[in-house]
Image (tube, rainbow, N blue to C red):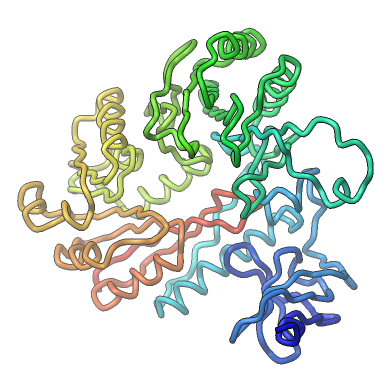
Length: 471
């Protein structure tokens, strides 16, 4: 056993990192020709690699010694970089991040989908590569994550309370965050003030393993209209402490327009089955786009980068090429943002979505925006989106589809082929499953346009929009 283990862990010296791959890992080649996936290097680095996993076709490892640093590198701005798993590419200059995102999308479409591509429209980068998120969730913990240096030192580590993020792959370990570069002010100020006040007043921070404590999570949502929502999740109901904290937040940050809380005594901290109680202000905030207003509550899904969501929707509308006469189907419509965004250029838009709450929000927002040419329906896409549905609601000229990461169910793809609209606009947050779906439609549709959009700078995630036209 020990012999096998020894063989599995190898050291490769002076290896050049040559590419960036899926899931944010970079790629090097071992002397035996196998690929090595690394979490902590940048293309162009020359490193020694300690492997910790060997598979048939590849190794997984870590760069341990850096002989030469890549010219694609930049100094990470965040003190938590390398420990926090949120911004894995912060050490790579932004123009190179965009290059590798573009490359991944193109590779997936050509290698997985075997799709013939037109001239690829360059990726649309984000004007703000930092402070771009409109929603952040932080977790309280009474036993914060300790760095390697802290564990090795014999100093008194003092306060172990944390308010921050889960360490990647560890459900019960929370990194205490001092300054996060993902959400604009006053996000950091609110988080730090809440933590300091809670410690000063001896509030118990949550312990996930023991299921003890009072404070569980805090969500902060901001919007381009200036609205701010803060929601605190308590593990149990302690009226005196709850009101003490919420009053402190309201008085210290009068700019908060929606202050809410949840009492959640169950094992996990998801709020979708919980009662959210409004303590002060409204129970929602508003986001705005081209005069359209979208009401967002604590449970709503909304694209987390508002500025780039606007760019993404403009590209989607542009690819659809609407003249005002078209019947448009918007599949996986969510809260109906794309449907409403394209409605003024369409004759009618029909949105379909599996989540009932999302459809309720979509209908409410359409009413709020006085949009009368949209209709929303709820149900599992592969069951609702059938021949009877098309007979009742009409033959679409254009289908817009924005499925989850898994892509579309093959029955949904088949139904789109049966309907055979003139155009399909396929918005995807996972170009690998998008490529798989495009391959299924390749005999009938050609890719006329493709454009990647960077919604999440400093990470490997990338959205892609494809226009399909009938052959």
